[in-house]
Length: 78
Image (cartoon, rainbow, N blue to C red; front, side, top):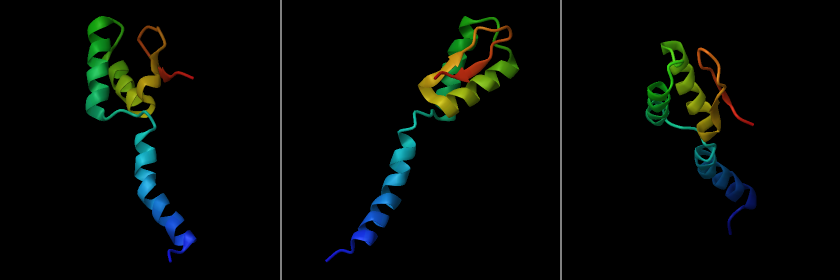
């Protein structure tokens, strides 16, 4: 018979990486592709803004939003 505490611990260990993948974060490659589009569509995306864009998409995924500033800034939308 399986110990319930052991079963729960096993499920948490196996499930933790899957829960992290559901956070909506993007890989650096996917974030860069999104930010390449941003840079191509806006004159206000400086090199510094581009790096901030990548960081935002890596952290927030699809919840990353441009603030409409000059130069452009990015933040996690709520």
